[in-house]
Image 1: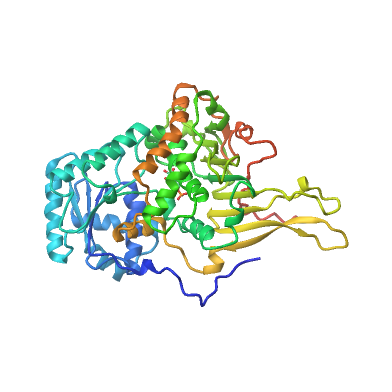
Image 2: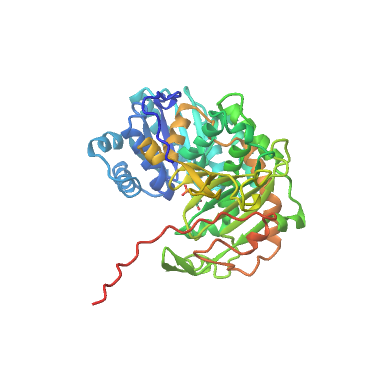
Length: 522
Ligand code: BG6
């Protein structure tokens, strides 16, 4: 069954139609990958949809020498490559507001030049000093940038000032604390927007709507009805061109500490008293506090790591992680993690939350699967309770965004045979429109001053605290024999041993590849 959205229903919440105040955005790291792949395409889309404030300006900064015009040309190429075709008229208007200031982020004179440029823009546009500083740089540079902004008098203005911080937010608990302290020495918590792009995904926000705008799910959303929850972020890509970063990070820091933990908190949180940043983030923090602390040797019972070797992805032969360009041939960095977490709170006591993230897995697939308990009695002939497929709610974050509920149905015929079937909602068919990209939504929210979809300092530190015993153990214990899974498989066999009796990982079949046309025998 496919669900189609009611065409006449007026959207209840049209906040996105608010246009932010005139403002300027300074991007540190403007010649980097993130600016080209995500930020510029998102800003251009916002311009196309007329959601940017009038006279919105961008000031890019990096060490590379470039004129405003060279920056504009480079950004156009980036938008075309990563965001699709640009409409010339719209681009012309947009690019006039792109500027570039060259300079190292640890050089005080860079900030003087940025300040002068911002003052000019304020004067030209009446931006009234509204500014956001986007730190698309390595975390080690962030404290220095915050300090230099203050020294140049840029941490305050006649309008509002916000600082947006990209992930990774620190490297571990200690560095995250230090970074929070460095930011708080200059900015108040309300001024700091910590980005986790998963929170900007339409399907992730829909999780909140699904849970709290429908009456029927809340009564079963607890330990009495839920048997287990599996949250998987599977990628077919390998480390791509990011070996330098990834060799420092690994899958636990790259995907689990942030994205998967965010999905966990949204799945498990209590209803907030209001949909605002304080209430939502306070409930998420409670979930993080309830994660059962891990200790020493206990880590082995709840955490498994893996690293991919050579194999086949989409029918193509790919190299192992250690053979990727820029990777240490003896690297012990994990490209796969599986965790079993328990939440010691009233709602979820006893329900395992399995988390899994990996690169070079057979299918690109991010899903939250809530599996319900079996009915108490086998009523139907030969079908025993244990043989019935349990009810399963699958929240597909990407691709094929949607939600399906698997339940038992009678197979047509004279007997009472039972078979699982699906009720299925697909974004694409129900709404027939493309969703906003995560960065569009998050950039717009930060301009509007809405921090609901951003991480709070306490939340980030608690998430690192959950990871700390695992990171510590893995740092001191040599990894299992790496590589321990082949590219194109569902990770190391040890991940199965994490599961409780009767539980299995949900491993969908790979997306079928187009077959070569069979030859017709002569
Ligand atoms: C990033 C990670 O945060 O998320 C990448 O650094 C990962 O390694 C990416 O590939 C996945 O994001 P998405 O939106 O493609 O699921």
